[in-house]
Length: 449
Image 1 (cartoon, one colour):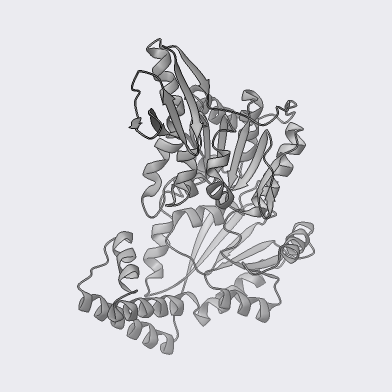
Image 2: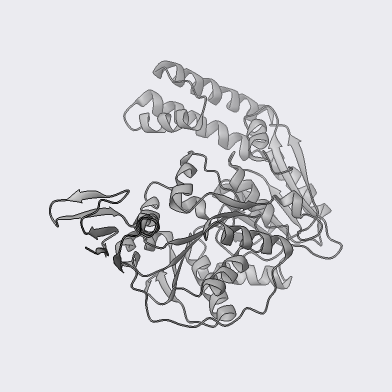
């Protein structure tokens, strides 16, 4: 008796007399059921065991033919693509920002010639990918996000839209490309990977690890790391040579007093609730407790106050002034942690500002003027970390950030595009005697390897 495979709202229905791996019996339909992402494993199991089966799982949109991409891959890009192909067309490629991950994915799409879903974090990235696909592969793309809901042979979706429509998208594509694949491991977004039947999967990122440790899900949902190369390995030949300069500044006497007071209040709060912060999980526990415990909430507020004092120190603005003077003719991106600091810099030094509240049209105008050299400086709070095509700059000034290595690598990538005779510089301005010092060391782990 032949087996029959079907897709049903994010799951596989397996009809027939044999039990298969990863499946459980569903009395309601008198058939076995399995997560959709196990489609490839189940098909391979049936073929290995010479079981006759009918496959009705993938129902792609109308086919479109890809044109050949005339742009050649660099040596390391070729190695990355070949590693993915030889790993069964599953896995994650880890490359620095600006090293051409998109082109590798487009070459993979060209080589396979199958229906493809590309999942990206932001609407600007969705439009950027769509433009690249239409230009290089010569096919019209469907879009899912920003009010668009059009499924085609090649579709680009935001993680939010893919999550909301995973059941509908799940049986349409043979290849799934996850840009900034670390997002896929987030608590909600992981369902996208689970509900897609796509047998071929490609993850792209500059940093595989997540602070919450959930990257352990990625080998199951996409595949393990099949290729990885660091910024330092590409510096000189393919990316700009760069140096990272740490500038330490002193808090004012008043800031020191306020910082010390806030830290002591934070420690008292932790002591009163019996919590010791030794890992990100411990801190997440504090955040959870703050919803019901006044002492935990006060401790969290004190921690935030201390952090703001260290990050928004007046001495940092003086250091910034000196750096701007030293780099008058260079293109500079200034990164802050908080909007109020970014706004103050914009007001004080008449530098265009981009935050998450900047309208898309205004943001695009600022970036275009920066690209054209009309503006040589821009300041931003986080929004340019990821998901927006940022023009080349030679200098990055980091006035505040988290301990996330990913954030640091993404900011580093904003100045790494190679330019003749130009060496990139990344300045970290850090407040002495504060938690910022250890945060700086933590986020730079592995970057200089």
